[in-house]
Length: 99
Image (cartoon, rainbow, N blue to C red; front, side, top):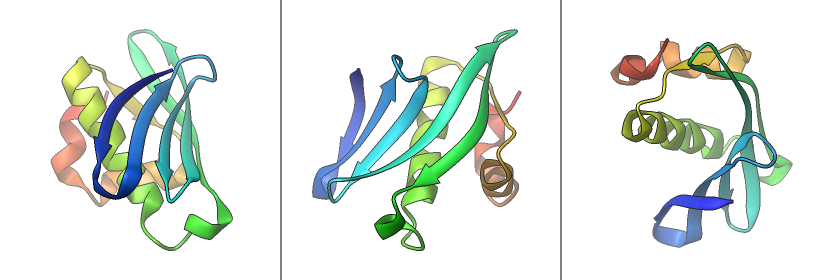
């Protein structure tokens, strides 16, 4: 597991290749997005946050980190999880990373 970025307050984004998921740790709690790859695209079928993080924007911060990671790694994303689809619809500035 390799840390991709770290921000203030102990927030950490990681691409956990072993579990095929992007992880966002905040306040010692986890939000994650499962992924699988195919045809040069990274599919995002599921996003989930620890109950204590829900409603506090952690999943949105996870999605921002995923978009930044995709941009830096020249990845193209295809969200299939309803939350991820919703997030990209409301963040057109991240459309450049969509397949």
